[in-house]
Image (cartoon, rainbow, N blue to C red):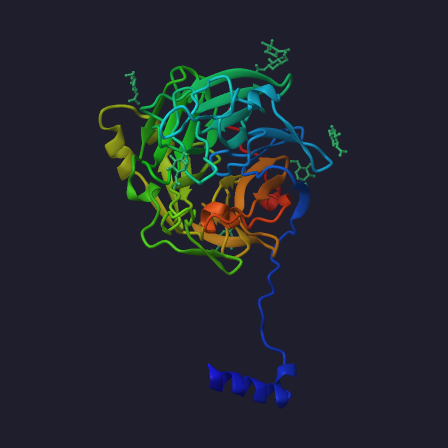
Length: 410
Ligand SMILES: *[C@@H]1O[C@H](CO)[C@@H](O)[C@H](O)[C@H]1NC(C)=O
Ligand SMILES: *[C@@H]1O[C@H](CO)[C@@H](O)[C@H](O)[C@H]1NC(C)=O
Ligand SMILES: *[C@@H]1O[C@H](CO)[C@@H](O)[C@H](O)[C@H]1NC(C)=O
Ligand SMILES: *[C@@H]1O[C@H](CO)[C@@H](O)[C@H](O)[C@H]1NC(C)=O
Ligand SMILES: *[C@@H]1O[C@H](CO)[C@@H](O)[C@H](O)[C@H]1NC(C)=O
Ligand SMILES: *[C@@H]1O[C@H](CO)[C@@H](O)[C@H](O)[C@H]1NC(C)=O
Ligand SMILES: *[C@@H]1O[C@H](CO)[C@@H](O)[C@H](O)[C@H]1NC(C)=O
């Protein structure tokens, strides 16, 4: 290094430093509009209703300090109000049963335990996805019990729960982590006619896959069980804002590669293709939704055989899509939001901004794409047990490409 340093000093002394050298312009596309600052709990998801009401979730399964509420409505003054009410967000005595050894998450069907996602469906109902799992203060994720893992429908007109679908332990395993969900409400796709929900299971220590729910019968099942495309990619490495990211919870636990499986999930504008991707990987995958709804004896064989590798897109967490079929994803290494265009199979940068880091989750409402930036990589589980996050966390929006809108599968 020494000779180079000397050379630079000599060049500077000779005046070469005044010359123009090509540099990264950083800014690309629409400038993100800052909508909300999170000063209280740590958010992952965002859901925006047709009228513009905004909701976030704050998973106790990823942050042991998210104890006051799991879901909240965002107020215009950068505060949040527990939703649909405070009581539903407060399991009596907390979410963890310390009388068991090791401690376990409580199986309470009438309370929220650890919510990883909130989504507004095509007819403007809010769905809450509860993993049923809570993190201990020492960084250990407790296993779930029946009643914890669930999908809860809330009527936004009167803020009342209209449906609770519990996942049995043979669908959401005790060490599953149901992460994100998308809805197709077309009556034609099931016998019960109430539509289907598709979920990712991103478990870091258990099996990964896709969970399918018949919203009419409440039945659920799994497909793409632990195949390589839903698993963390071997040898995965990622950095954000120049900082390397590993799983590193401290407390004497080993450093390992970040191991988040199938996480991002979104539907094509005709509902016929489900897109998904793992966090610990770079590929975008597609699978025909008919193969996932099929429960016949050979359905898993055909589902696995029908997965399409749509190529690399960068490292992203959540995914979203619009009425033109454009798929949006984060790109945490390039401070960007990328788009996949299904017309020509290409990936390109849609937005690039120095405020973009860990784009956790997207939501589409009106003609806008909403997204959270939550500094996930700076959390204690990645930083040797030391919380390096800096409040506030942020919610932004940008216009959708070509003034598109939400996909209406009804
Ligand atoms: C912020 O707005 C909420 C909802 O309108 C209100 O209840 C709360 O008092 C406000 N907080 C402050 C600090 O203004
Ligand atoms: C974390 O705490 C739980 C409950 O006290 C304990 O069972 C577990 O061994 C602890 N883990 C570590 C790594 O210290
Ligand atoms: C939501 O509540 C309103 C007001 O009670 C009612 O008119 C509407 O039908 C409800 N929607 C659903 C999906 O239950
Ligand atoms: C909300 O609407 C639903 C569906 O119409 C109804 O069953 C429920 O009683 C309503 N709840 C309140 C608190 O008005
Ligand atoms: C889960 O177990 C229940 C009860 O044994 C059974 O009825 C159901 O079919 C099982 N579901 C799956 C997806 O295996
Ligand atoms: C793919 O199609 C889109 C929309 O027509 C276009 O903007 C983009 O330039 C195309 N990409 C390539 C690499 O041709
Ligand atoms: C975008 O579309 C909306 C309707 O979805 C329309 O009201 C608005 O004028 C459009 N904006 C532009 C710039 O075309």
